[in-house]
Image (cartoon, rainbow, N blue to C red):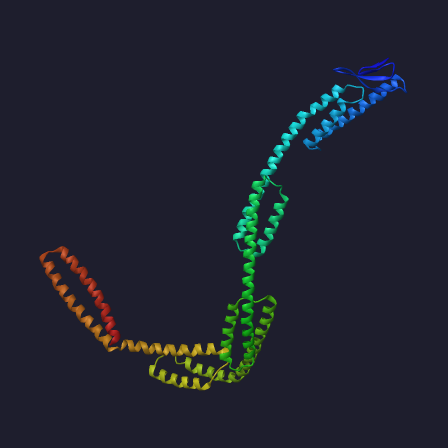
Length: 408
């Protein structure tokens, strides 16, 4: 009989393994020596030990989920329990049992991790829903649509949470998306209708503008073009392609008209240049009349100049404002002198000024008499009041006399 620390080989080639419950037959190896028989069954044990070691490493690394690892532990334990091998099978079983607390810790860690991911997913989905509901109430039709698509992608990337919460949040999100999409479609439908209406209006405006392009009624037609431009702006945008084509027609008609008007005006300016020279000479005469020394003579001279001014005719447009301003300045100065003379000679005002002087002189005489009586009576308080009154009235009298002299 050949023995081993964990087993032995009987004389008939039967191999036994030692366990806590006693020996157990693990098989026979009749074809070889007892040593070869023990080697065969100890190598089986070594293979089991390697498998246990490999399982320990995989559990420690966390490459398997706790559920997968537990299943593997059960399988290997069954193999160890019934193994036809010679070795410390109890030690292998103990190592496998030692993995249970590790797996329990991993389960707890996974549970905490799942709870954290679920909380993050819930928070993320609530944020997505809140933003979607804000977008659904807004009117950012271009960026809002892009953002809604991004939010949907973000939702899909998040894991599901508990079914009731997930379903409730999805309903809110879906409702917001649907509401936004409907409002967006309604908006663009309305815009499309407005653009079609604007195209109809602008087509009519372009037709009228083209009909006016050859008009020579410069003033009236220019005013009508201004009206058409206001109507064009008020019509709003038409579909882009149509809007650009219609604007090209409308603008082209305007350019044709105003180009012809400017050309005609340029021809007139050449004709009117001589008139401007005549008015320049008249201005030299007119400006010599100021400052006015003889009003009647200045008025007569200016009337003659004004008649010749009107007879001279139109001047180039770029000279009109300057020339008119200079002749008006002379006229204003002459009229100012005339108005001042009238003001000074106004009989009614002169009479009122003289009457005021007389009244003030009478009042001053009365105050002077009262003052003498107060002095004689020794009434210092009264004297002071009357003296102040007298000074005030005398000041008014001086002003009234100067006004009266202006009208005399």
